[in-house]
Image (cartoon, rainbow, N blue to C red):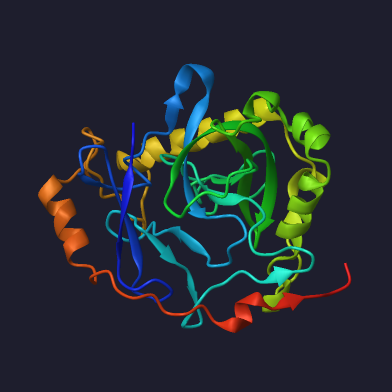
Amino acid sequence: MSFTIEERGRPNTQDYRVFFKNADGKYISPFHDVPIYANEADNIFHAIVEVPRWTNAKMEIATKDPLNPLKQDVKKGNLRYVANVFPHKGYIWNYGAIPQTWEDPGHKDSDTGCCGDNDPIDICDIGNKVCSRGEVIKVKVLGTLALIDEGETDWKVIVINTEDPEAGDFNNIDDVKRLKPGYLEATVDWFRRYKVPDGKPENQFAFNGDFKDRDFAIQTVKSTHEFWKALISKKSNAGELNCMNTSVSDSPFCCSAADAEAVVKSACAFGTEEPIPNSVDKWFYYEK
């Protein structure tokens, strides 16, 4: 199963969008139409790369827009770039989400005591390859970190791209501790402090910031898939989320290929990219 992207608008502006197409060239939603499983029997999942490693632009699946293209988050009228908190530069993994999952804001997690953040579940790919924006990769789940982001449960699932030459050596979170020493500690540090330059307090974690293992993480992903099933079938209230899709045949939100194409064609034509502000390269320093 292969996917391609189509860019619209001008990169590094608020009209920039990344739309997705399936192998037949039909427009799809990365949130709803890319299958969660690449290989269900082996618990291999698909993941959408929103932010390639080392970059700062906070690109994300636009959950409230038709067809859910990738777009850059906007805060206070400006494009959002994640700050570099020394010693980190941009995102320290390929960052993205697992499709057909949803962290239900109406469900209080029994482990964290907090409700979901209303987004697909997030992934941090620790593989060696720097992926490209909009790339759909196949991943092995290794463990998860439970970030509590402004009172909401925001799972960060640690994965490795199955095409990574070292993927066979990684089967659980302990393998990351052993083979990539310091990476998990850096991950906690990154998530704890990345909003501090914006004037916000350090983030908190469930489980004292400890990582849960592979089995726990897989079960967490599967539970968010069940929440998504309720969302796409109108058994849960979608609120502002846009559930337009082209392949979930029993979903009341399923639309025609023509409707999907009309959404893409209504977006701005692809154009010349704007420069990224120099301020994005600034490093922030502060005492832990």
